Image (tube, helix red, strand yellow):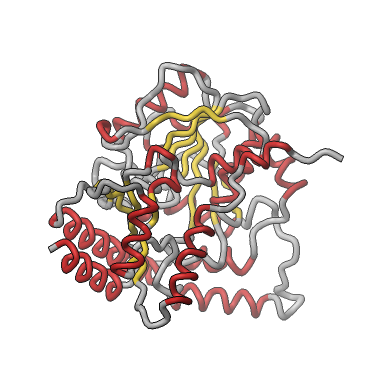
Length: 388
């Protein structure tokens, strides 16, 4: 028996697990310390009532054979696809068969590689969320890294080299930078010229509020010929524990692409949870949208407060305009794990060391506005006291 040797390329310990263990150890040794997290990637607001009511009704559906739902369509129910088409892709020429409902963007952005030849050249901008590189390793693919530079405001620049597949994430995790129409147009042109496919992680689209930032890559002309877009319900409707996502594979990429992927999906996936899909459907109601937008506004206000505070303390800060994440440059002459330890022990504040997102990120750290307003204010107070 032989194992997949490429799995050994994944770090033995997950970086976020290592961080959690460090925090756990500190709490055990210092039980009276009040820890505040600025590194939170999860949400701090519950699922709103219109959505939970729809999910309760979906549970009731399962209690009677008249309304019972067993194995559903592998690509998702049309009732949710209809809402997606009417709201997220209004006035765009997509159909039900181009929408795939799934159970998490984290899974989707990796499993989609099964669609492409194993020898395809893959380009991943870095620093970047670790799932991309680890997912590529799991599927025994080779990675070519593209450095995202501070001088370019952490916007990935089109390479001279030809790649078959390119990962883009906007609004970006970890840098918090959202790419403009101009930025994305260059990448779409590159993909067309090089017959490449863009895998576009758009999990934070709900946070976009700047006019020159597209909410979908398909707002760029001809992007539907070269891009597969991924979206998530985790952050905008607090579904991080429920698991529901979707992605779009346009028919215009090539004539037979959806037939090929449907065969794969039917054989490898039994469909996302019915209850989760009914909740996601309810999130598009007018009542739900009002509350969802208020929650997102709160998260963005948290992010703006943090950005203002760090800049006032002399830090260089990126992101946060159309994203809940900030990418902060370390002003001390230490690396990102050392700063993590300093903040944890002296300020009882959790941050995410930049090196988790690639060695190029070691002079930065990521913070998030997804925590509660109270925690954000406590953290700012401690930081101001420490640096002043």
